[in-house]
Length: 231
Image 1 (cartoon, one colour):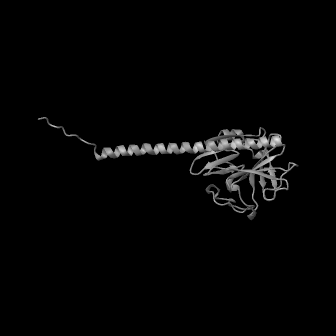
Image 2 (cartoon, rainbow, N blue to C red):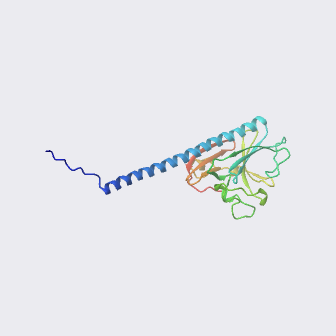
Image 3 (cartoon, helix red, strand yellow):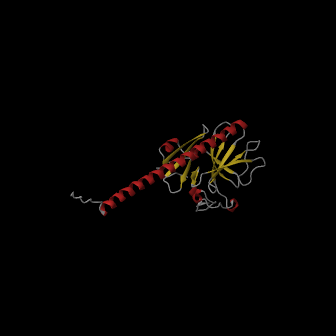
């Protein structure tokens, strides 16, 4: 009669080691997938923004009427206005008789402007020390525009194909146009700053957008911001 050899199974310690290794691999995979999806979402948003701004440039050149994009931190959107026949604008809250609201571009859910010519942290009421809208990244309801004067960033697409980078006080229509607002391409290439920075909740990566005023175009890329953007 043949003797059956005893079969030994896995010990509890060995099972715990295997389970631990599997959990570690699963955790690393989840982190990598999350980073990939975040980058993909920002990259898709960058492509849409590039196309959107190119459309404004084409409209301005073909109609011979300037278009202005106003960055609304509170709504996490870009508002587009066309100038009147004299190619001048009224103010945002009190538009001129011929100003025309054209369209609004909303950022995807979970994204917000960390900077749009101006930084979110300096988007505030006149003389204020706190941001005008400190919870913009959480998508809370915007405050009424008539509560306090504030300044925000804008891009004016001109009929000559160029784009002016502006800061303006919407309620009064006061505009501060200057190429000094333009972040240098070298700073953008080094991931130290950008004209427009879009953040994703809980992610370290940013969508960095470089505006090229003389060319009337924008470049976009997704990177980790290395420096601290200046207002």
